[in-house]
Amino acid sequence: MTVQRLHVAKRFSEIAISGNLVHLAGQLASDFSLDIKGQTQQTLDIIDQFLADAGTDKSHIMSVTIYLKDIDKDYDAFNEIWDAWVSNIEALPRACVEAKMYHPDVLVEMTVVAVKPE
Image (cartoon, rainbow, N blue to C red; front, side, top):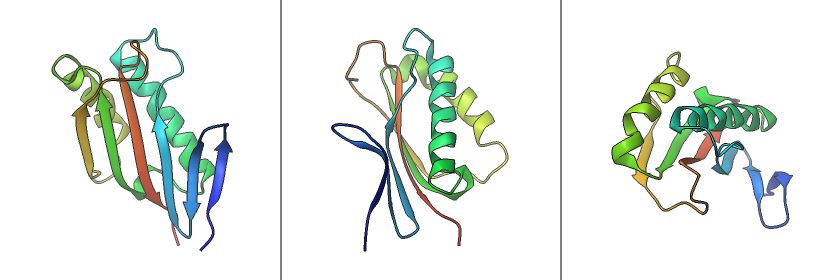
């Protein structure tokens, strides 16, 4: 089975597609000066766009892994934005963990696995 890669950079692809399976690389906001709500919204907007580029949408997500820089401080505010984003679909499988980020101003990063509709 072949793998199609979209939004290819020097070290990674943002999207990999094989058959109807779609993997998004870790997504994060482009503006690190935003608070957790702003970074979360920007990240979810990017995920929406990349899923569309791959021929699918958030209703076809199989799993999301969420990395928060400070889970104690940011979990509730993150979930406020998340809950609005998923309000029209069934609850998505997800894991949420605290992680050290590659840059000190990154507050949230998410990886996504989805399927393309048949």
